[in-house]
Amino acid sequence: MTRLAVFDCDGTLIDSQINICLAMEAAFAQSGIAAPSRGAIRRVVGLSLVEAVAMLLPEAEPALHEGVAADYKRAFQGLRAGGLIDEPLFDGIADVLDNLRDDGWLLGVATGKSDRGLALALDHHGLSDHFVTLQTADRHPSKPHPSMVATAMAEAGADATGTVVIGDTSFDILMALNAGARAVGVAWGYHDAAELIAAGAHALARRPADLTALLEAA
Image (cartoon, rainbow, N blue to C red; front, side, top):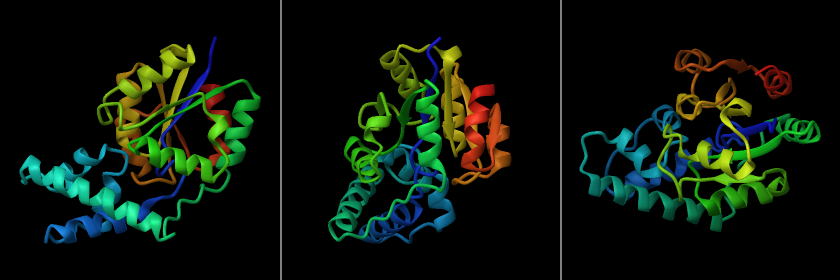
């Protein structure tokens, strides 16, 4: 049976919260709106951009959601152009990916990032060749819709019984369940552990070193 591990990116593989918060704050300022708290911003990480803005501004018109999302993209690109983007891997993640690949797992990513943003992040850390399937917000509905996982399984030749989704938010857990896959939550990201369990995670990794054993048991 093909074994496929599909990882979220932000909050699971890399710690990108500072960049996301700075870009969102700049986008709100561009529209003359008080920025939400950083805690509120972290809670929407993982959603596609327009959906994330809509959750932060639930009473605003769709046109404003689109405008703030566009300003976010420009702010993020400005940070990158200025050399201010810092997206470190969480400690131990590189070893986990190496171990899983050596054990015969196929690896994928399902993320709210754009194709370009994901490619830059993976290239920066020398991880591009680890993954056989990359699914982003450019080509799919927002999490928790199962489209990203369903496409990852199709591209990898896997089915739901052999697929595990690993993520740090309830959106990841619900996406996995909606696709019929197993879900493993991680406790070092942007939603707390109790929320991941409540969403239906089959297991919870407290640290990256726990993942290999949890996936083998999933």
